[in-house]
Picture 1 (tube, helix red, strand yellow):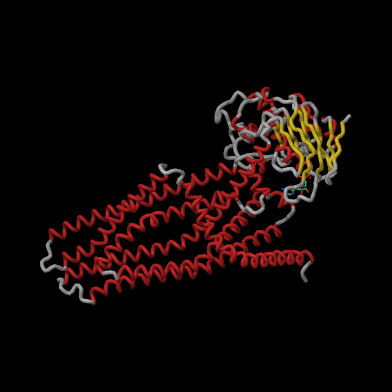
Picture 2 (cartoon, protein in one colour):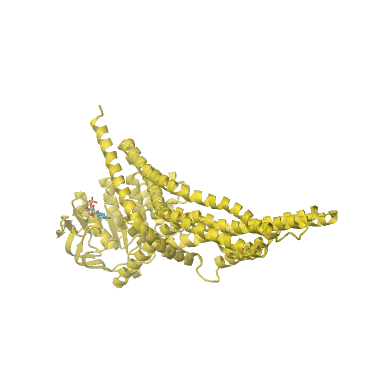
Length: 635
Ligand SMILES: Nc1ncnc2c1ncn2[C@@H]1O[C@H](COP(=O)(O)OP(=O)(O)OP(=O)(O)O)[C@@H](O)[C@H]1O
């Protein structure tokens, strides 16, 4: 008999599967509605991306494009000459008196043409690859520029529920889009020229019947492919999303391996990870089923095309149009005509083949376009927010301003002035955490924010930082946010990739990369006082840990918090906002840290549960989590 725990696990799995089935049905319905809209959206989003990769007319991308066009045209001339080689040999060898000198000349010419052909083909691939790199750089730069604008990355990752896996879109989808498009571009740009030229050649050899039958064949192929293609695009978009979800699940385990291991969570994590895998594979299977018919149609058209070329050539031969010619001339002409017709059909087949690549391209275009639109919308919202708060000193870019302790000019008596502020979580507007709060945070008056867990303490800090909007009231930010004015130490210590120095000077950029800086002495003093010398040694010095990327795996929570304080002491802002920043250190260390803040003249705004914190503060703001608050002086 299955144990109670196993039964519960089974029921969890079946609930997840039922959930997924419901979602599958919903997506089927949505699919129909989305298909039409997706096609219009594709054109809009593709145009948007084209404007990113071709920013202006005279640009390196445009020059590359022109060079590629020239190379492709030249390549076509050489391909035409290569195609004529067999007919020229047939004419020489099938003549009544074959001439050795004529044969040798033709042989040398053919070798030169083949050499040229190979060079041009490699050049065309080379330029396409260079374009791929350049496009990827342009699109990623554009996305990064918007993503890292103010708090846009926070809003996208935390507050916007409809935007899945922005990281995957930037790192993977852009790569695939650029690769696919760079492979298609040569075919797209050269097709009008080759089709025009070979249609003319085909007309000369076969009369109007040849080109017309090939055109009819192409149009039929395109219409059939169009019908098969449309459901594939929405499936591809979904597959990319599930691919990102699956990768995210593995990343979650990677980042939280220790916590999961403490819970002995292997079974539940196995179930959840397999669930993501199965959702992905089911969608992939549906996609493969649909692609079967697309591939079938594409292959049918490729092979039917070769038969059609013989039908086209047969028409003038069977109607006796070439009966007056010598046998070697007819053979040469048939060989030449075969090449022209087959090449023209090949051009059309190439365009039909593009349809499979186009579905992939459309999927990536939607995902990148969606992200770009969302980024633009969020960026606009943030800018409007900033304009509304134009009285605020603004965030600026703290990393640009690398001066240590040069905050005299920006010193102000107050950090924040809150009037009648009402605050709710962003997606739960009926759950008021704080109602009509009036608060003035001024220099020299340390503020302690207390309340039960979930009562809105960190949320108030989010509002102060401008991450969350308020439901009502006004928040005036008087002191500039950043290492010179108001510096936030979040509840989860944030350690970036890079050396120990980069952790300490964060969010500033390294002023003296790889050199001894004048700040080294002071940094070492802080490391010693905070008992972080063992970290200094393990990191092989301030600049030694470049390959030691994941600090979270190798530092204890207490060490991470002390490192955050080393950062705070390095910057010495006028106001320090500490969100449970000493929860993982001993009371003695907590006392040392607060005393150091006091000695440096910092005003602290702390969130915390420990009663030992009271003695370092002057005022206490108590939240009840239902909107109520109380401000008391601490004696
Ligand atoms: N991004 C979010 N979207 C919606 N609700 C959120 C979000 N972040 C937090 N909340 C909710 O807002 C409420 C207040 O959260 P907050 O983090 O401010 O609590 P807190 O008082 O700091 O708690 P703790 O002492 O446990 O840190 C909680 O109920 C929380 O679940």
